[in-house]
Length: 510
Image (cartoon, rainbow, N blue to C red; front, side, top):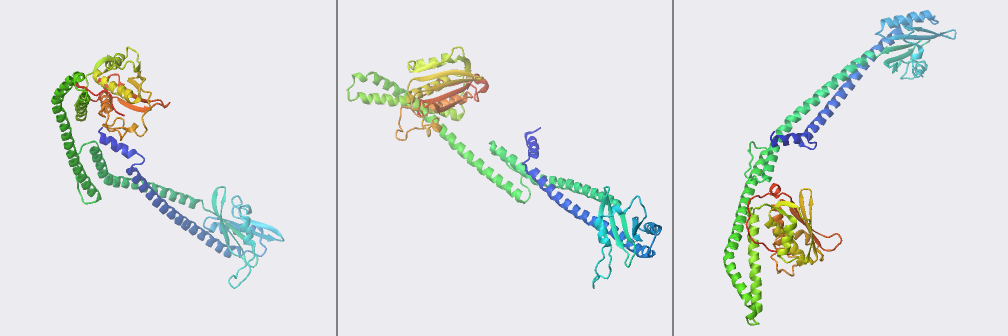
């Protein structure tokens, strides 16, 4: 699977991706609309179904009470009420009837189905309203009215209604089951739920199609920007259409073209600058070699010269050596910048290598070495010598002795710690100690070093695949430089190859 395909899958699964947010927004809008429409449709249908059933049952019950219950004798018997209730229930649209009256002060009851409908099933509040005589007014010409309410008996919904015969007569109650209407409404609810789910799926498909249409150009733009960031400055987008995304693609192409031109110009100027420094340093080496030879002869004869001339001779010799070191360092820096610096890897004993570096510069009395023999590593001995010479020389020059050099191994790394006992490095200087030509004190821009020593040491560490860090000792006693190199530079180094036997500056500036 290609990297772009993997990135597309990861982008599609990421919770903060634009595609997912579009899907969620579309789904929420569709869900809200579908639920709202379904809720309104269900509520309207529910009211219509219940109202139709209720009006039909109540209208028929009113007529039955007028035609049959009102025709009963003034003092009906239980059998009269029973017959009337059964006839009313038989001719009605599927409800039970209960008739209640009094005879000689004793209540008598007639029910169309004594097992299904008794006085206990009638709510007390409804009985109270039915038996309550209403005051006669200009707007109310009847003493008794028809009252109804919906209730639940044993988990089944029912419509219960009741009224009383005006002028003396039985009170009648009706019990109508609404279970069929409930089943119909449940079926309607399921249908609306399925419709809502289908609308949600449809919205997701539409969102996917819309997001694909919108996000595909955005994804191509992102891939192009990523390639541009990786250095592929010739990356361009194919532009089609006249919409905002097409304008964005054109803007990207113009920006990429401008960036490519600017980078090409900068690279050309940088290459010319490096070539100039390299050529200048190379051309200076021949006259410098001659001048150095003459300066050494003058130095040997300085004691026999006029005392007024001897100081000038010593100054010329010193500055000639300094200029020679500067030229060598500039050539080495140019190699690093051009990427032509190479390693010559060999297996060495670190303790022997550090000892040889210190001994060659007569630092044995000023350096405390803590290194066990037998630590074998594969690295470039000459470049390690340059790193150690700069770090130890810098510590002696700016920190002061005693300088402690500790060598140890940490897993697959070689760790060399150089610590002095001087005043430490100022906090504002620490971030710049490895910068080229950086001077810690602006009032002292001239020093014995070129300002390139630590920078060259860091570059030599990097070419091995390692690094150097600088910090002040936690106890406030001096500065600490820690060199970390892989124990096998051939595996970890970025630049393999052979090296140059060029000289480097010993020491540096903080």
